[in-house]
Picture 1 (cartoon, helix red, strand yellow):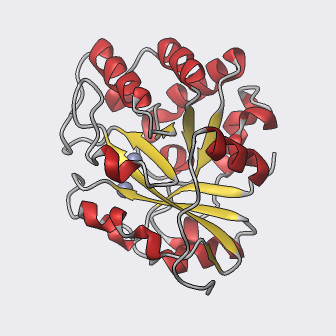
Picture 2: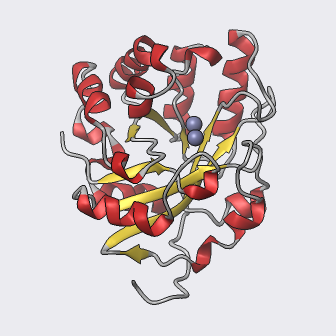
Picture 3: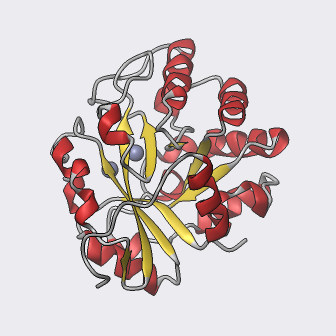
Amino acid sequence: MRLVADLHTHSIASGHAYNTIDEMARAARDAGLEMVAITDHGPNIPGGPHRYYFGNLRVVPATIAGVEVLKGVEANITSPSGDLDLPERVLKKLEFVLAGFHAGTGYDGGTVEENTRAMIGAMQNPYVDAIAHPGNPAFQVDMEKVVRSAKDLGKLLEINNSSLTVARLDSADNCFRFAELAARHGARVVIGSDAHHASRVGVFDAAMELAERAGLTDDLVLNTDVGRILAFLRSRGKVRMEQERPEI
Ligand SMILES: [Zn+2]
Ligand SMILES: [Zn+2]
């Protein structure tokens, strides 16, 4: 398996990441990627960006250093019904919307039933493309139900490399089960680095190994092909933002 895009990365705007968007794009180029999504945390993360940050992302070029840059967010799930910390009028203008659980941002987790409802509720938001690190054991969900819903709704589940190497280190068993269920049900996944530093852009080894071991084939992993990603975005009604600056 070869991945051509990293669709989960954080810039300095997230408050606990350390490089600019330009630096992240250049790191993506250096890692041999064709595309990168900048998915800074939603406004409820401590030290995170105001919603104006997301509203103004159109000023960032569509291509930096030869790499296609998707303007996105990793929104926080803020309630048991799956509400997010950005309004739909902002979400609808973003090109890649991850949603995920983060303690301290509005919803700190509940029973498996409550967490499952919250996660599926977030997937039902028409502007959400993927669920970030669904295997986080701090927010246990009914994995079978989540995978079936993701498939039905045409949403992606992420296999997050950082969950296997940097944070949420007790995630591996859940991540493997998610990957196996996705393979069995034919649900699509995306593999993300969740890089909070440029040196980690495009670092996916552990997640790729897990995906392959679980039986996921290239056709079920969105970011094995840029054409596949663009077709997905088009199918989701996403259009690349207007480019207001020339390529740099
Ligand atoms: Zn973070
Ligand atoms: Zn996250």
